[in-house]
Length: 226
Ligand code: ADE
Image 1 (cartoon, protein in one colour):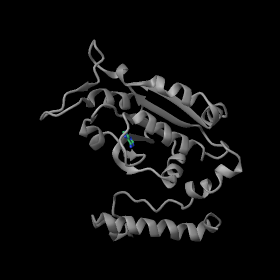
Image 2 (image 1 turned 180 degrees about the horizontal axis):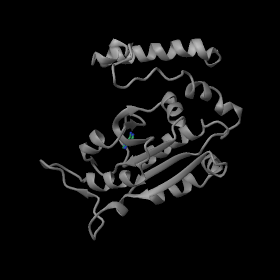
Image 3 (image 1 turned 90 degrees about the vertical axis):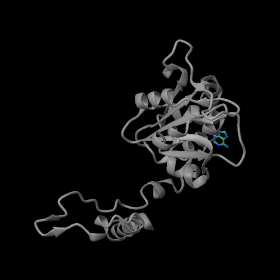
C-alpha cells in the first residue's frame, strides 16, 4: 500500500459523518493507513461573530445560498498542490464506478458539501476542480452524497478490501505512462517541440497526448497493457 489518501470533507454538519467514518470498511481503511480523514466545519471559516456561511440570493428567490468566502478560505487552508477539490452538487458530472476508480488513485481529495438552495456559482467556477452528482435527485445537502462517493472510492484502494476489491485498480492508476512534456524554448539546439503543442488546438493536443502515452506504454511497459 502506498501513502495514505488524504480526504478532507468540508460541511456545516460534521456530526453527520461521525458514525459513517467510524465504522466498518472506512474505519479499517483508516486504521490500516490507506486513508486519512479530516472533517472540517465550514463555520470555522466564517469571518463574523455569528459564523454566517449563507446569505440571500442576488436577484431574489427562495432559500439561502452558501457564501463563497468561507469555502474559499477553507480550501486555501487545506489545499495541497495535488488536491482535487470536489463540489458535491446535483448539477455535477454523474458519479459511477469509473469515477470511483479514478478518485481512488488520487493523493488528496477535498469535498465541499453544499446545503440549502445552493452554492455561490463562483465556487464551482474558480475553486472546485470537479463537480459531482450522485444521481438525478436532490438531497437536502451534499454531505450524504460525499459519503457515498468516499465509500465507493476508498474500497477500491489496494489492500483495503481483499484481492477482490483491488482488482483492476493498479491497471487503472498506472494504465498508461505519461505523455512527453515540453517547455520553452520551442527550438532547443535544433530539437523542436512538436508543432501540435504550439497550435492552440486543445482537441488536437488532447488527442496527440493520448496517442503518445499509448505509444510510450506499448514501447516501454507493454506489461501494463497486458
Ligand atoms: N447535493 C444535493 N443533491 C445532490 C446529488 N444528487 N448529488 C450530489 N450532491 C448533491
